[in-house]
Image (cartoon, rainbow, N blue to C red):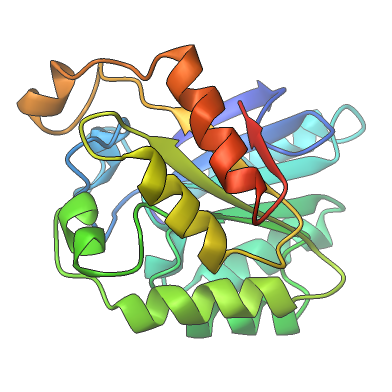
Length: 229
């Protein structure tokens, strides 16, 4: 695993409880609006030694019981299953953030009990617009398969989420995404923040207005329980 960042305590990354958050380096997408652009490349500018992560968990034992593994895209790492198993062996519950491009990995991790919660980003309606939103070619079938795997998962918490970007999304788009998620337990809409976007053009884009977020929430709620956060 190549780790690029650690957050010793987060109150927002794991549903319902504080957690430690670890960021993996590397992503197979190039979303122009990405707010974690420094994590996209193959190599971290300032990598975190694994020993430092394990030492942090040791210090946090008894204070927190959850770890969120995010990125980048964690499923790009071949040793992710071993990494998650070690976290679990130390007594922590695990949440994984993923872009859903590797459904086979998600299915394996769920089957093996390596995760207790999975959050998947759904970036756009499942058609040609998806690759535009992702900044590179994306297999729509892989995204559909990952959605199906997560909707069918039992014994773990699952959330889907979309970053709402006025320059990219219409209310119709959010409703179309929600239709694909029908049957899921929750769908979260989060407001785009332009400050650290990968593309200079998106750094100049406006944040979504509260009334636009609420309109998107109402449209999506016709198909799946939806919240703005």
